[in-house]
Image (spheres, rainbow, N blue to C red):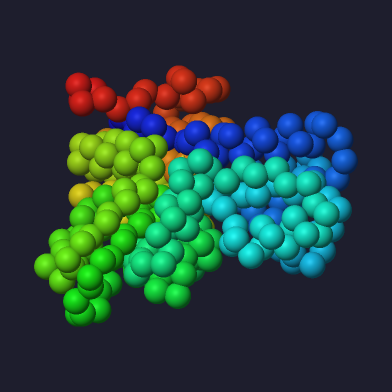
Length: 293
Ligand code: SF4
């Protein structure tokens, strides 16, 4: 049996930065809270809570505290309330998400389509930076058949490039001026390409990450288009049935999946298969490259 890890798996730059900023805030003293979960990974959120960083969901309870803004950003109005209530703001919004917010704000007088999951906090926050003519369009949703003089398009940072390309192709014939802001982050594109490449050469893919993590769910969607694939959050979800005789197993992990969980999943596969192999660190897991097979 072979098990490979897709390149670019695990913590991305934005998640690493957010966790570091939260820990620095804690170490500098005082009570530290995050408004909403800092990242979409329950195990890391729980670990941060054990360290002393609590999660607050009700903005009314945040007064005169150190508040860390989550990596996928918050609504403009919420940021104003937090500031007005005397909180010290540690803004851990990922710079890629921030750029998307600033772009939406810069064209808010124009019609804007934000392509993304309407239930995702990043998309809801992006909407708050727009104006009266800003609306969300889901990936794959057909745009209204109307003529636009000028139209702007912005994407949720973790979307598939093909979804953005499809939307552009659909609206272009109905638009005199189309402004497309490619706000899909580089880390997302690299991770998706690497996972897809590995999936094409595996008879089973295991995608590891938080069940609410948008980028992990996209990885799962991509992988299952080319091979058998399932999404788990921790090694405890792995069973002999799921592995089902697979000999070439690929692992891919979302941007907020910690390294220790990837290591646990890798070791659990070998334990289930009854093969005496285990690693201590992620660096010991073979990473899939084109020439690996
Ligand atoms: S996936 Fe991209 S946009 Fe999202 S936090 Fe990571 S680096 Fe930032």
